[in-house]
Image (cartoon, rainbow, N blue to C red; front, side, top):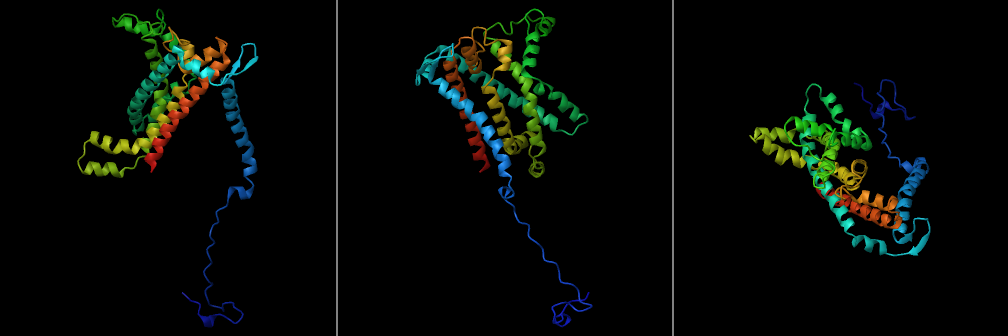
Length: 318
């Protein structure tokens, strides 16, 4: 290897014959600000359109909730918090809030527990795993209206498959959607059937992304499978569980389509959620301002619960 010495360089600054060329200088890559290339003018219209689609309906609903809008379209003026005071004094509102919280707690708890079990099964490297995952996702990708109609036929008291199966094993028929004490559980059963695979898919992806080193260390220390799952698996999986629970929370609090298709809030308001109650107040009772107050209350409830889960997730990330 020939090196370049000061004598190998001519007075003109060029290396003489037989001298190796100097090493090329490495160019540092500069970070380019996206706005410097003119990207922001293309993104700004989409941001403005999205903001308008979100903010305009909220502002209009908020304005409608403090006015006295008549069914004929006329407005009798501002009521302030009159609709909200009427709402808080109405027993039906508290019943709908109780039904909403009941469905939220039962569905979220069962879907999370079953999602953990199915997610673990779906994370195993066994033959046919992808086919099993595809079949499990069929309920989640099916329209909720179709799911409601399907289960409405299954739970029919005379011709439904559910009572026929019970009769085959010697159990008396059940009035699934006509008994006020059973109807909320029937609605919860339908939601659990439809959305547990969604939870399982997210949890399965989280399990497959967990690092292997903590589990190998636990196995070397002789920890049992239960202690390993409880003290290592669940803490590592907590951020994924928080995201899955947050997604289901937002959807469960505004529960509407399946309930309205199957029971329309009955029997005797046993399945009358806040969303169904607001819909009936607006389009059946012809009280748009009162219905707007209900929807603003539902919006505040969703934001409050979602904000709580987001705060818990931010604390875990620190």
